[in-house]
Amino acid sequence: MGRSRSAESTTRGTGSPPANGYRGLPSVDTVISHPLLEAAILRYSRSAVTEAVREELQRARVLIAAGEPPLSQKDVIVGARAALSHNLEPSILPVINATGVVIHTNLGRAPLSQEALQTSLEVAAGYTNLEMDLATGARGSRHVHLDELLRRLTGAEAGIAVNNNAAAVMLVLRALARGKEVVVSRGEAVEIGGGFRIPDVMAQSDATLVEVGTTNRTYLKDYENAATEETGAFLKVHRSNFKISGFTHESTVAELAKAASLHSIPLIYDLGSGCLLDTAKYGLAHEPTPRQALSEGADLVMFSGDKLLGGPQAGIVVGKSRYINLIKKHPLVRAMRIDKVTLAALQVTLLHYLRDEATDKLPVWRMISASRSEMQRRAKRLVKAAGAKATLSDSKSTIGGGTLPDEELPTVVISIPADGRDLDKMAAILRAGTPPIVARIERDKLVFDPRTILPEQDKTVEEALKRLLA
Image (cartoon, rainbow, N blue to C red; front, side):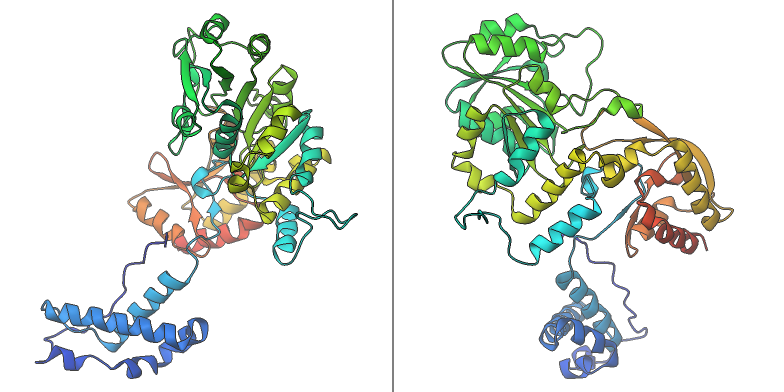
């Protein structure tokens, strides 16, 4: 399991071990009948507790053989309970994100809206019309639940969702350019994150990568000169997680679309972050949107569902219907399709945009659109709970998740200075809490940014700060 077993809080007896250490060990029945294991038996079953006790007693025998003192009965109980928790409890836990990174990849990226959560719960708890046309009673397609929404939101002729954006890129290349060449700028043959590299995905899709231009400057003529009868597509990749500045040049979507059309090949655009709102309204750099990319001439656009879109993990492909239809018929679609729970959450997320309520309902956009004054108001309440050992200070929140590199939002944070305290240990204590709280250490201070703390979590963080600084 992903969660590491906590350090054993054993209470080994002191003094010399008995002449025969093995005889000093309690029996399995004696340990199981101890009142300290009653709750564990109720939660995990007698057989599970018995197995854990046996394993702990075997560990005790190994220690005795190595010359260590024998474990006491309480030692065995503590070890058995730790093993039960480690082996039989979920390792993925709800976490409070106090880092100030809005789309935190390590913490699961975008939190879902309450409506998306509720709909997903209802869909998961029973049967659905996932692949049934309720009007006719005949078998239907799961793609119809998103197709119309994606058309209306992006201006595309059609759309489809798979399990993540890497899958979307892989599927598009496999369906449209297998055995052919795909031309991409050398400055866009990038690694997006987690080992997801455009050249590697290209190889797995059975397409041949043709790099053109240089890292910092690629012209339209570079694409045109590389186009041959073997060319299957032009690929443009949005550099969503880094910037190249200075002496640079890149071809526009409109230029590439015109050139691709002359060669009767599609222009494929890996947009990545999946933004549907104007980021400039919130003091951020402009982030290209699927609608913009399609209006400028891209034939297919791929983007993520769990980044700036603010929904569940998904890879979305929108564009011309003739290409989407080819993709829908590809055998890989079945391997990459999303399940009913993800589909339900994604549908509700898209509906938030159509209802013009994304900044009110989607946590990612509530965080991005929140003002500095709102952050200050919430931070004051938190620092009041923490007491004199905590202070307020101006700082910056980041977007994260491989989106909007170097873009920041003004915020007010709670800071706990080191002052002789072990900040790493304090941060570890917070992460070991229920629920775990993840803060950041910056310039000898433990920092909490209210921007990424959900408002309903403020009280929990207040209590945790009180305990931490008591």
